[in-house]
Image: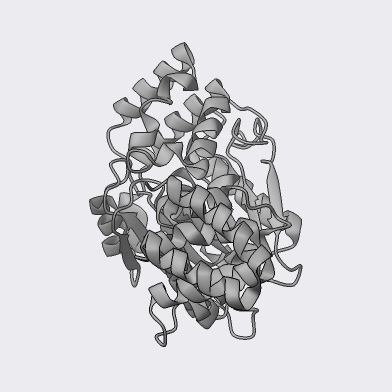
Length: 394
């Protein structure tokens, strides 16, 4: 029999996290690169050795065409990647097509998996004809022909204009046409509904409640068919739920990884996971989704630990404490930033103060109070910055 991976080169990969961390492999969604996992990467890589991979012709992976690409072949590639790392067993999480690869691994290589998380995926993605039609469209007109329609499937309207959304749309635009079409044909042939009962790996199924590509009903079919599987539905999330609603998806993943980690293995601190999730929620509420999405999109391997730290510590421990309301915390924060001369942060927190309910007059009083105790020159600059910011809200 011909090796199904014979025409496939090993995918482009990236490793993050401590070398002695518990092995974790992350699979991407069709049309995206490994960057689809960036919202969760910093937290996952704190205690895991995380390996991300790109689909054929996506991100940094070499192109490939049908019939070499199949869900089975991609699963074998993942096993080879684990072998290269010397990992006898590993946890796996995958989104959409990456999740289908995880199901295939669980059915055919259960001895290699510690645990499985299947995000916005399915044991069967629907009528094969629709996937073959999409493949034909891409071969004729390129992935650019999908750019207008995919954002409405991947996330809520308008999210494509955020840095995170825009970057993923660019992934689709630059994906190799033949490779994308081959992946569509692989999805068309994917059907593991009759084999779900054979899955013995501890499994988490995650669904976006507004996902049109892999609706919650698909997730329920998987969760009901896999013995002992748990199901988490994410409100106000479409197909790329982990990008649109990163905090609740991360919390579900970390709890699942902790619960299924082998005894003695390096494990995630569940307290950290809780703080990160709570901190991200408060950070978005205070600073706004656009600011936080931009910060997440700019995160690099170098800055990821700091982003994780500031989310857990400043936002997850301090801003969530019950002793002061957010209006009061904004007053204290503005004063401290005036005193320290932290002008970029001051502008950001003037905007945050408005979101927390402070009026223009109350912000003025805070700055006048700061002039007495922090110095007139500091307050003078602060008034200039605040006036510019408040003019945006006039």
